[in-house]
Length: 565
Image (cartoon, rainbow, N blue to C red; front, top):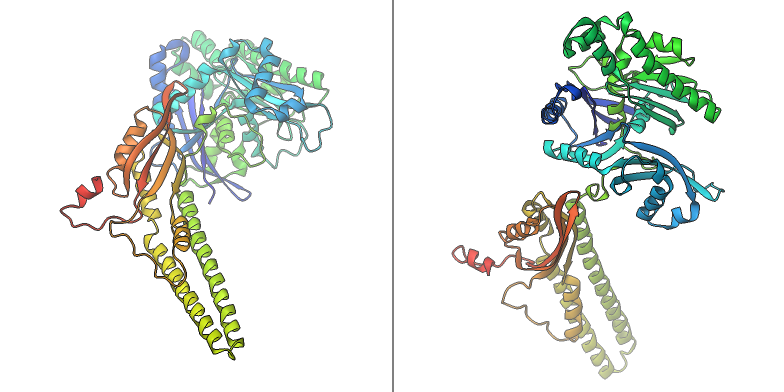
């Protein structure tokens, strides 16, 4: 069954979380979390607001009620820059990705409102390269300050959440609306997200973003006006706005927001000479009673409140469909983040590359080890078959020479030697099964010994049965008895481990933990270098040790001493 993903939308006033799973053509919602942030930015110091955000995220993601352990987050605001950039096709296709990013930075440097050296960038190619005939290729680019990425990652790390991606809100909005497949039978759509601190305007066509603009005006502006007019505290003014609607005196303030939205959509239509067929309204502002009617009067485009849950199956027993429909406008971004990336889908992901790499799959290592062992056995059986065929040919020759008794005797002796050789090879196969390393147990012990701060890159085991079989076949002449096995105990294999750790002491802890398991002996750290993962100091390292093919057979009193030796 497909794995689910959690979309986590950390807004100004609320935290929204949605866990989705896609099964065939169906989208199924497994969890919805909604929690207020009990600290308004301009009324609260930074430390108290940080604590309030942590509390809200934990409330939206209750432990034990979620299937997924991975979340996707998104950034928005005036610090997020999105552009369509055209660059020469040759360099874009030929150069490494980091070089292309440097070319993009040079191209848009004048448009970045913060120091270029602090910029974090990601891009994807818009054009279909298979059919592209032009010399330039179009790319969708997103640029944000590194401080925003670090802040987002630090927040997830503090809570203990495994982060899969960092997207930007306009793309999450597009994917969240894409769930409304039955409604998307028009060519060009608009999306208006009326948030608490800002509003987002997006225009898209067939999943491609054509235009986006962040407007630094939102619902908090209206709440502050109501607060002043009715002499209420902020919480009561917010509640009055939602339940009672906007008083007449607030209309000029809302008109500022509506005008900016209308101007943004008009600018797109004039510049691109394209008509917007349908516009969806979402965000907290979409819940205000007068919003839809007021915007319809100001914007000459068909409008409707977005409800993606009309095409999503509800797998939550405790949340009814009518409640989901009621809160749906708040959740568009979280829904878009929770939709897992398809193989051919192009996305922005601002999470640093080193934090996206998956750890070594021990199931895959075990499978590879099992295949390797099987291949060894097959090779030896092929050699055995070849020897048997040779023996058959010799016997045929002996039969044809029955008239010469001496000749028959000689050939019979040769056949006997081949028979002995065949018997010896059969014993080699039996020994391989006998001395084959206990891969499953070894890999389990590796997994149990590995600290959480360690990532494995490569595991290599050398000195296996193929070498032993080839050496035996080379050194033992036909017709002679094979050498007896050494009585000094099983010869160890050599295991090389390459990896890295977030903390510099990670590799030491790993090696110390491994020493407690008797399969691993004779450790040697072969390389180590310091590196950085974000703001964390780390180390890339390699070490080798010997791996016993089978444990020494000793009595209980001396077992510990022998293994340590």
